[in-house]
Length: 109
Image 1 (cartoon, rainbow, N blue to C red):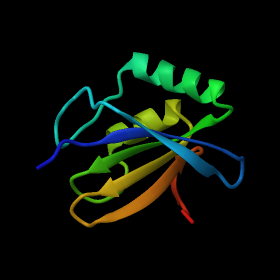
Image 2 (cartoon, rainbow, N blue to C red):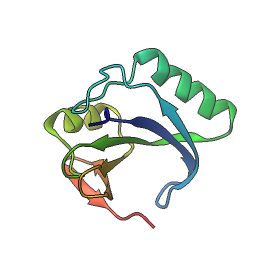
Image 3 (cartoon, rainbow, N blue to C red):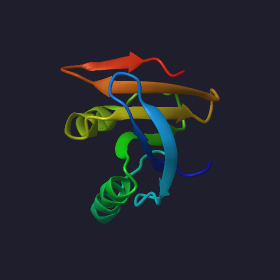
């Protein structure tokens, strides 16, 4: 089974976010069941986005099961308040989530 993949989604907008660029990053955990983005990569992504006139609008990663956030995801969603897009490698579908007092699914268009 492949390792979880992860990337930053760079874009613009407030209520409706338009993704302009996907910035892949290495999974520091290198396992199929979890991911970690190194802090240096996080800082580099925010710096790159600012220089490009964009914002870090989301975080993408894959799951070996459903595209629902894990407990670990929810903890990190609280401190990274952007859209989290999760792809299920077993179901072949995407879902997007935000944390605003609690986790809720949001539409992707």
